[in-house]
Length: 265
Ligand SMILES: [Zn+2]
Ligand SMILES: [Zn+2]
Ligand SMILES: [Zn+2]
Image (cartoon, rainbow, N blue to C red; front, side, top):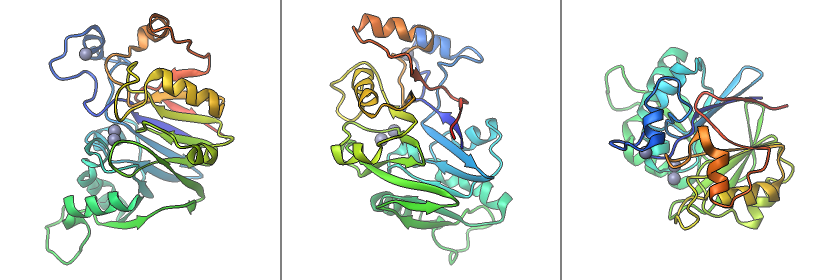
């Protein structure tokens, strides 16, 4: 299975608008790993392609990463940084000559239907530029194009939010707390991509670096990558930043970056 990190940034993206901190200034230079678009991944295996979330950078992300097919979209939750690019699924639908099946929590399906109602019906004449969505609510393990997918319920503010286990890979971009019953569902994973917004453990809806290292040490994947990362974390100095915070960064824990490809058996 090939995992492409399409976006590794928090909801504002990095650089932050009008921020002149050292990380944001670096993010504005071409090729910087500190340049981060909104969180999303794409996975492929045996020529089947799943897209996770459709944030505001979606269409540029798939173009830049040469993603040439999408069989289905899986949503984690209904926050804008994960759904506001939904209309842009129109181009994959048009090129592939198909409607797009989408999967996710019931609440997310309802919010998508409210925000993008014209994409759920073929009755209304909308001109040529509409991608049609086929909603599927998921609650338990399901199979999709040869991928075994388990929704992992997580606590993330007031909206119903899933991470997902896909085979031996765990993707949990937006989490504040991982209930024990959800930890069990992740037993034996090899690669984990998990939320680590900043160093602040008091953030109400996102895990901190220290908290996510603890979860990683608990789940023991071979490799852990942090995503949904804000401008306070800098790729150039991350290890030093952890030392300053009295956090011991394990050898197998890294910051994810846009365009990163991770291969897993
Ligand atoms: Zn900044
Ligand atoms: Zn969120
Ligand atoms: Zn988010």
